[in-house]
Length: 380
Image (tube, rainbow, N blue to C red; front, side, top):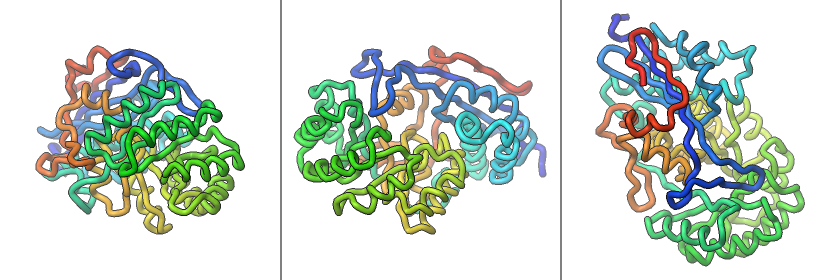
């Protein structure tokens, strides 16, 4: 292997960004959690004249895992051997625990390696991974449970005006208010836009089943995590008994290939979600999507729309991408070369090598909490 083909240097940055609504810093809530910030780890790896960029929405603790455990494994490796690097990283975190923080670190590094691989070959990441189609349908996602009805309707109406053909709101924090919130959401977008709801596991089984029937009367076609994603029997109950035309979705907490196998084998979902910033970057995302194909279940990408646009367009069985409020704002600040949103479709730039994004260092720097660079790198 020529020396110029090896990964010779790496840079890492950990960032924390306050949550914002209409430019104002404020907390956000779903059915089970309230948060006031989002953290991400950004990884860059270089071979010869090419640099690959990866990132993951994860705990800042993933920074140390990437720096101390994972980056030493990819330094000196050939980016074309990305699958080998993925499994070496997975093996290395055996005693640390793969799911959670370590999975986020693997995801960021794997994304950087695959981006570098595509850039070295002079092709887009979408084409490298299969090039199934030019774009993927996006749905607007936000509608947090602490929004007023006016804020909820304003956000959803704005997405409908942008051309998005589906929107999703959070439910479950106050079940007594949920039907009114869903009705307000329907009124905001009209009948031509699909309406999704996400309970983040807040409901009990029979409670969720009752809501499924009531939500269906308001035209809801997607019920995400009606019960805990750990409750595979409960999800199967909802999948079997929910009204026709309503998809039961879950899978965003999948960190390892076996997670997706278990959820699919249980027949728990109509659509399985995967998040490349949790499940192992492009390599892990393709493993999840392949299992979905084998189970005759469509896949969907969870949050992180900028990176998922390239991955989703590469695969024929991904039905939509989550255009998530928090990550839309962050990715616009952090990266140049974002995929375009055209008539409700996210369109990756096939003319750009890799995923086409570059880090806007100066803009991102205000959110930097920790940085590291290998000996041959230029730090943040």
